[in-house]
Length: 214
Length: 214
DNA sequence: TAGATTGTTAATCGATTAACAATC
DNA sequence: TAGATTGTTAATCGATTAACAATC
Image (cartoon, rainbow over all chains, first blue to last red; front, side):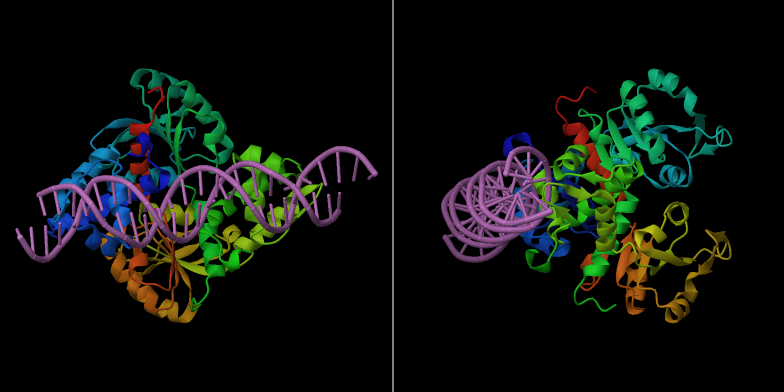
């Protein structure tokens, strides 16, 4: 049980296990061994068994793992059966796409509010939610008490907005802005989606790949 | 020089160095020591010096690092001064937002083509580029030889499209689809932007955070 | 020169892999 | 029971941190 602390490496693999098990379930596979799964996922069997045993023994010696049961256990570990309320700040190109594209419900969240500072957007409906004026944020949060927020705002406004949200009790941030929130507050949880960083990493890898026929 | 191989951990930190140095430059800072930078970024000074020394000695004993020079060196290491041609497949909500939102030029790429299978989108202009019919993909690629592609398509079509692109010579993928490309081909470079995985990781962290006032 | 800070080697820490006894 | 595969401990590997001599 690693003293209750789960390493970041393990956390990042959990959603992938969940996805692969879901596909196996769909294709009618009901049991799988760590070795078979490792081949499908490009990992070692050892690693899979180590990862799972951070949370308990879900398998059976001589048999392997029950696909449906294991997927549902991992879903539970990830908290996908929760429904934490979440608001989204910044309904530009990106924010709109995130609001429309993401299945929040199946990931443990519920999107309950959209905010933007641009008057022309206020009142528009996106995914059955009205875009609200950012100056109604305090009021909305005091009423609805969301604990998590998606930030789709430019990095210039990220510091100010995140401070405001922090004061309103928001502690979980899904951060699409190129600003490092985690440096300002210690007691928050941040997941970064840094498009630019990812594209730069792709550039680096392309430029440094050996035996890549380009 | 680590035998020429740069670890993934280092690669992921490079864009962040680049960003921080850019901000320092903007705020008029011309020199910085590894210790100062480490405090700003929440790293150790040791780590910064180790990372940089994978690529050479950019500092000066007793002085530190020249901000502008170091940023430009890292930009060069990342290949941001390149201009690799890139196409984008799937101009739905997400693809459109990516096309409009990302500054490809400053990240070492040039977006030269947009493709979708939906007739109603074909011909529309996005970012001064016409959306092309996916059935003209072969022709376009044979003419323009892009080596990289952004995939903003549902996972159902990811396997087929990636095989087609691979045959056309594409070897770098910026992958927004929930499909694991790297399992099908060995000699490609993939950067994944898995929204769902990230949101699930956020869910896990929120549900497992101790001393988080929620 | 003296002080500061790098580049680099050595020590530590953590994550992955291998091995195997337990057990279905 | 025999075969298979887990759960778990031990060994290895790699990444981070600490230390310090080199040097500006």
